[in-house]
Structures are given as structure tokens and as C-alpha cells.
Length: 178
Image 1 (tube, rainbow, N blue to C red):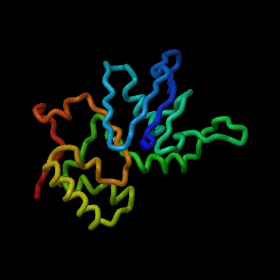
Image 2: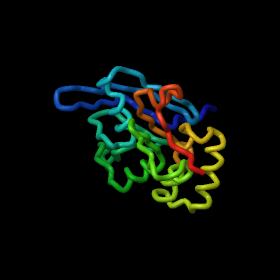
Image 3: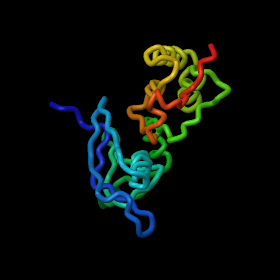
């Protein structure tokens, strides 16, 4: 039997005024699967990512994350109602999101940048976060983007124009100062 998708998007619709930027988008993403969303500027890629973790409310359709409806709940008569901010935060705490300009702290080492989220947001003990971070940094080298696996996130939403994913582009992911 196959495993249920981690993310299920069904007929997702989002508009800004008269401009409909998401027109019935549907897809599934299973655990361990990588999905690339490619399109020209203004085609709705960032809006889609923001809808997945409800940083942007969507007008129609459904987003399910690990079987949980994101951003809405069904009431007693089976109608969708906005969910509580507390429940939305619970879902977001299990997702990581890297914005287009992810701006690491320049005054911190790679290790310090990597442990910031788990220690501050998820309250992972510092020693445990450092152990996990060192393992990931060793796996990917001192640069790279392996740090996004560090938290207890089930998924990472990554928004990029592509330049920062190309090691030859000169983009800097962080510095190691010992």
C-alpha cells in the first residue's frame, strides 16, 4: 500500500482583485519527493508557496498538510471556516520556508545560523541542535542548503530565482569562521 501524500493541493484558487493568479492548481507531494515549480515572474509561484502554509489565504480549493486542512476547518454543517491562528501556527511549525532573499546573520557562524530556528522557535536544547547541525553541515559541506533539514519540519518551501542554487553563481549561503 502506498503512503498518503504529505501535501495535497486540490483545485486551489487565489486572486488579487480581478487578477486570478492560481487557477485550479492541483498536485500531491509524497514524503521524500522533490517538486520544482517553474514559471516566469508573476506567474504565481510565490503565491502558491505562501498559500501552502497560509501566509496567504486562498479563496477556493484545499491544501492538506500531512492530512490536516491548512488555514480552514469544517464547521458542524461541513462548511469551511477560517481556522484559529493557533492551529495555523501549529501547522506552520512543521514546515520550513526559505524566502527568496534568505539573508543569514552575517555576524554568526554557519553553525550559529543553522541552530537559530530550532533553538529559538522550536526550543530544541542547544547541545542537541548543535549535534544535529554538525551532522548536516558535514553532510553538505560548510556552505549549501542542507540546514533546511535540521528542524522537525516535514517539508521545506523554498522560493528562489535560481541563482542561489547554482554554486557557480557566486551566491553566498553563509561563512564558516571556525
